Image (cartoon, rainbow over all chains, first blue to last red; front, side, top):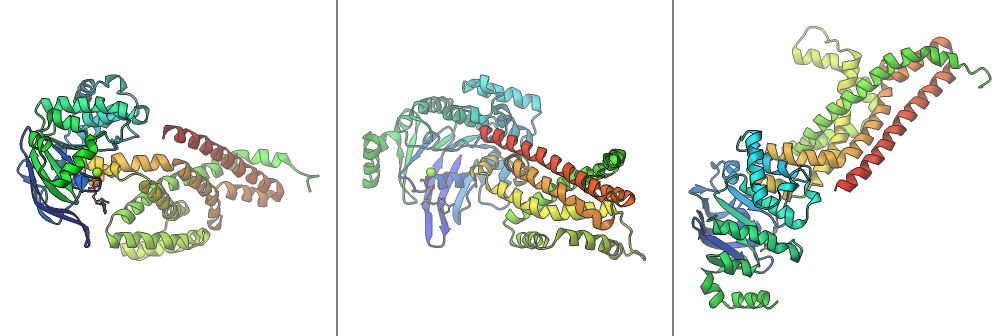
Length: 243
Length: 230
Ligand SMILES: Nc1ncnc2c1ncn2[C@@H]1O[C@H](COP(=O)(O)OP(=O)(O)O)[C@@H](O)[C@H]1O
Ligand SMILES: [Mg+2]
């Protein structure tokens, strides 16, 4: 579903942020990406839907090459859902309109249909009653669940998450993770940047560990938690699991 | 000076002052603000587009307009536009443009320079995550601007935009150089005709002051409301 091969990216001639990154996510697979802050996780995941350009290597999503100038990027992105650390709901639009905007403007759905779809998804994330409110009137956890619903409204073939719970108060983390666990169990293909190792244990098929722009470890979940091969991954794990 | 102050002059002139003069002033203010906002937003988008040439052109335009006294622009534009029109269309004689059309175009072009700076600040105040989220949903650049960035920039900048429009409302009185009957022009005509300069100019000052004050008060209340929403 996602093929990443030998991707290199520089933010400036002297600063290489990604070094020879190669991995893949197959259909229905849940891959968790972890690693220290600044290791390039966000950058890598943003390369997948071309929010960030890269200088060499290839990425393809469902057979479409992301870095091909001929690719219709808006069309490709409409099939790749993305959830951001800071939610990024549109503050000037009501919750339901947040869910309808792209359905109507990008997919050309009729307003009635997009509202119906939007309400179904709000119900699914437990926020049907909030449809007429504005984002600022919701808690962080509620906003992030709306953001997930907004991405799902586009019927994506794969979902990308960039630290979806790290901007949340601790008591709101689980309501968001629950939605993601359900999604994973329904067979959604997911690439998730997160430090929530509980989530990884529960639903991940593979875990990728990144450090200084490199993919240091890429292993099935049980292998990764059982016996990480690299020192750096072991140190990182002991740090985040100790508390 | 006030011993022979004649209120009757003012009252008799009211229909003329408001139906002719104020209607013109408000129409010019409204249309120039709207046109200036649309054109100014286009200039702001050019400056932020990332295309160096476009940005440079827009920047030079803004600096140029801001370094000229408005009254000169109004004056020159009125006398030059017929010849520019002739040159553009290849006509044999200068194209006559009414004083209203001429002053409206001038104000739109002039105000666009100021509105563009306001809208540019408004666009830059939106966090980069917003356009990223819009793109991630599949919206094109134009759609992202139209549905996500510009509505927020406009809403955030509304108090400043209205304040600038109040300045514009006062500046429209400069069309007197073209002998146009705007509110001040109408007052001035009555003043000359009846030899009542004190009454008419005092009354004109009070009217401009009152309208601007009420609008400024409205802006302050609006600012308070926007602060709560955000
Ligand atoms: N737009 C940018 N320009 C320059 N450097 C950047 C930019 N975005 C991120 N970086 C740098 O790239 C590195 C990786 O960032 P990021 O991918 O956000 O890491 P992570 O998500 O793993 O914390 C960091 O050192 C960060 O400072
Ligand atoms: Mg990050």
